[in-house]
Figure 1 (cartoon, rainbow, N blue to C red):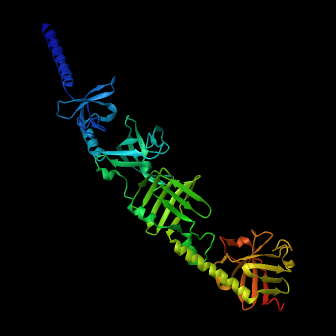
Figure 2: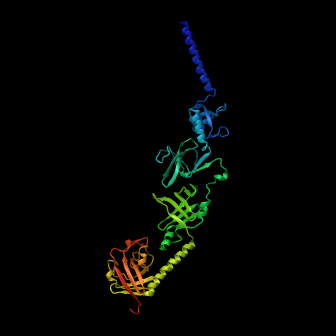
Length: 438
């Protein structure tokens, strides 16, 4: 019986000794875990990205006591600055991965940019960033996404008070704090500056030239993309609208694509003489393309078009200027493209609204489609003084002193180009003669 008591006594003493040894080991520098320093408060004491042993943990101070492996020196550090692991191998793997991010920071370029719980535009927002607020980059996801017009990826970031989450990189200016000062001045904008020194006008100008359909209202130096990099502004002036963009910074997305922050404008340099704009207005996306044309080129092309129209009208004057028809009255063409159409009652009201419509102006600013061009000389638009905004349109041919007019309704015209003949055709023949002979 005594032997049994002595046995239990020895076992109890042995167990106490083992627990004491374990406690002594923990209190005297043993690791309770491992970690990677995401952002050091003092890089002279302990480096960002360092693999450390976690010696102690304080819930009261919300800190870890850490040290380098195999070192007796310890440092107290905020828990949010360390990513903790139970196993050293897991911490070592994360430290190796973090090496590429340890010197990377980001500056937010847009006020109100969200940090989200997950890398998803619909995920819960955990933080709202101020413009120019700096963030620590701690990870990059593999998830590529298009949000609106913007393509990009998600970064896991951390604020300087420890809030972590994910932010879309489109409005982040990412930089390396170890880079030389001149490397932190921003992206290389040489190509963009050289391109924007040229004058750019709508790509439709080229199409007008190719089709020989120069619309003088649209083909003008006042329409195009106009940049003032000193004033940090870009104006896009199209025929139907004008869009103005002010920006604080330019972000180079890739070799040819630039974002103008905080506006919603992007420019893509397609070539030396071709540039595309992408922007949104009132939930609608626009992507006009502009080509380089000098103002002198535009002025020369406009002049040639004006000469062409003048030549066509001079032919009417020289072949008439008075043209008569037994059924449809007489048309007299005068200087300054004025006309008088007498005895047009048979055209009222199906084509001409009222018999009182007599005088007005002839416009030659409408064009024939490619299919119609071989069969007709051109298009005459009769703008009566009573309602000049509602012209009456005719296809016409002029051969010697014979003028043939073929009525076309306005619905057959798209962007000043007659696309087809009318399904119910009215063709009128007039013959030219001088006023004296009439």
